Image (cartoon, rainbow, N blue to C red; front, side, top):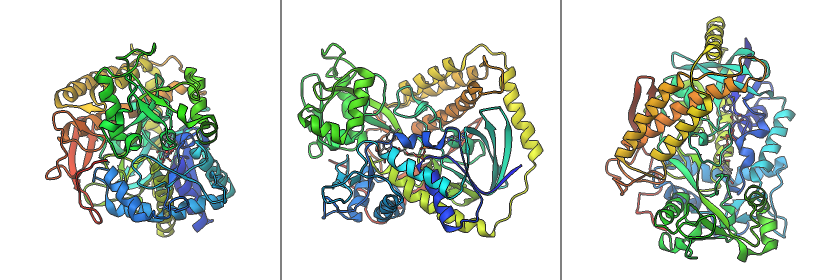
Length: 575
Ligand SMILES: Cc1cc2nc3c(=O)[nH]c(=O)nc-3n(C[C@H](O)[C@H](O)[C@H](O)COP(=O)(O)OP(=O)(O)OC[C@H]3O[C@@H](n4cnc5c(N)ncnc54)[C@H](O)[C@@H]3O)c2cc1C
């Protein structure tokens, strides 16, 4: 059995930042990071626009209170305000620390870190490295993992969380290269497994964003929080869904419909293109539904709108958002200096996740904590984003809460012993799971089922939702879950069998999808990203609360947790 003091699943920003913190505090601890990709290939590397912090380099009137207010308003008042206060107060410090590690931020002419405008932020506070911010930060963090001697298990797929009597004891993992299975025991287990964009058919997310950490947590009997809140980013490149960063609008680009109108004036007159993402995504969807979308041939009535950069000029486009220009050019042949970019909303971010307190400890329910189990980053819900996340607050969350969780763990393990685990039993079960996948003589290929499932989630639980649609969606989903019992694998081997991993990921996707649909069906109001056509208003009297969903194969049980309100009383949300 492999042993470590701490095992972290996920080599993205949250997992890497936590590992660095633990190593800094106690260099003698044996820390491991496990990732199903190489850590550098975690989705964090694709983050483009930036990381928010009130450095006041561009706007001296900015302060953490303003950042906190924008975040809470952006969240449609569902965020826990104690967690938001920590996020925004610690932001300048974590960004300066990244800079000291060597992250190459873009600069002002006087050498200080540059800051740009972003949706829903009332001041220019987003720090960036052109439009490759995640790349710049993740490379430095992973360099630091090596520097501190953290053990990295890359291309190992974690298939099970070992949780016994309310305590996380370790995990079971499977090596892609040769099919080897190992049990790991540790004094603390942390999940930093990222989001679940692949639950939907059009997403900005990596192929690896399949919600595995969420599903393993749910299977272990622990709740998932606020899963109905799925962020649609307004500007996915049409038709592929790849992200065109909000930084492009932060630098001044327009959204235009088939009539040539900057239609955001009808939806958010004071913020225009820089309204929060939920509002902008709904506006684009409404324009398309009203026949003011655009076709491939430029005529009205099509499925996208234009993102127009042309007035920004070549020099600004190439210096501030070169990667977005390149994506549009490479993927759909558009030269954004001379042509507008076709865009429509794409699934982007998971506001909900594994419930944690502000020290990163996983909640066992409405009250209470799980022993030895921690989570941070997109897979966690601390809840700083509530019902809608503001752009550039997620990288920030990964770094602030990655660091805090790392600190908690470094203290926590000092007095703990390695847990006892029946290794043989876990190995036998894992081998059986894998062998039964290989032996299965079903009738469906994985891809067929995955596609049907992604279409189902997109059609029945998208930007706009209502009761009958979601009921129908759940019935369809149950049929797809039945069919998923009858998949077959072409590859029966052990070496680099990526089909086995796809089958395990499909299991995660189906569980996460069911939790999203069920949580959404039972939230009878519209708040942030959750927009119900049959309940168009926000309902603070009965629905200002966090959903806690408990999964079991027999069905999902829902409970609720109160929202922490400290600084800002809920008000009407207008931009
Ligand atoms: C295209 C794009 C652009 C973005 N731009 C911005 C931005 O400009 N600003 C901003 O604030 N936010 C942005 N975001 C959001 C932000 O990047 C993410 O929320 C954040 O990076 C998530 O980091 P993470 O560490 O939680 O997870 P990730 O970076 O997704 O890492 C997850 C890790 O978990 C591992 N893992 C998962 N499952 C398993 C398993 N079963 N076994 C082993 N390992 C596993 C993966 O291999 C990976 O290492 C963007 C997101 C996207 C998709």
